[in-house]
Image (cartoon, rainbow, N blue to C red; front, side, top):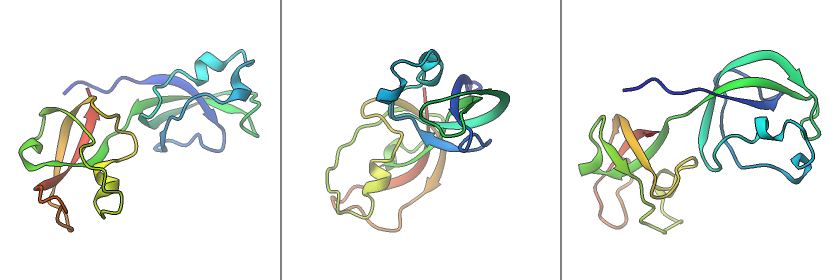
Length: 148
């Protein structure tokens, strides 16, 4: 499998720690007049990222109290439940949110943060079965997914 591509972005100094994982949620109104807004807001909304390197360069910021650091990020793997027949390592799948039962104990793993509905992912690891059976009778497996 190909090496994950890094992106350069800015993140608050309090958050700038190697290994930090976060979901990018878009620009804030305060960012509209900032000269660095393109460098801060160059990630895809709803995607999960991991900081892989923190660079020593700092910049002032209207949003982050102590400014920002320049960081390198990659898209992070996401744990999710899929139908058993899709749980094959190195398989490319299109993830779909097919169940809306928010009261189900499996709901957070069927709708994990960082997954974008109908986007393609690669199964990087098959973790195993689930503790709680699916209320709809589906056979599910927990897998780790990476965006394609």
